[in-house]
Length: 299
Image (cartoon, rainbow, N blue to C red):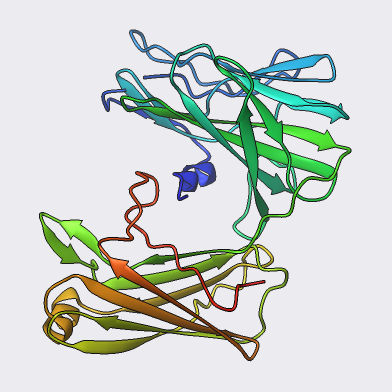
């Protein structure tokens, strides 16, 4: 899932009318927050997200959101701290039909960096408007980002710090491919192919990938160079190629497209095959990405 996490690198909050409303301060009942912006007159902040664990509670204001008639992007000046928790952690929200997801980051800081540890954490339903957080990875101190989405549009992001004493599950490797998008009924790659892998046990020293596309009228292959950014979380690798859409369509013709991905990680080759548009994700956060299932499996 590809959330709007670029907003976490904005040090000031901008409030603009966008059809959905709010207040970008982040705080709790236990930790004072400095430099709290105030919502303009007539704007309404989303309700707080409440987090509980071991008899303690913190109330989180969203630092990024679209709610009612306002959107705001920002980051917390300080992280509300739930302390050390040995039992369950629950997240609750008072509005009906919202859904929530969570991500763990290390170190637990208000201003994360691209190469910080990032682990998907599970939120399991525990009653109306309440979810139980199932932490991932080893015990330790984490920043927990929670992201909520309203069924009819609108969202919010909030964050807190917690020290866990129980180890959680280790996420399995995940891969995604951004190939084509439905653009007014026509396939469009918007000039790029993007391929990514997360949560490998180790970051590969050597990595190479090839994309092969077969359409009704032809077949073509493209090398996907590895992205050169060295500041990435452990176990993450990215590939990117710029290829004009008209060049691709001229080579392969009309859809459906059989798309094969071959990736070599430290000398071990993995292959996967998908069909576009049949296998494109319908998740609004996935942007129509494909999910390769490799043989042999990634590790």
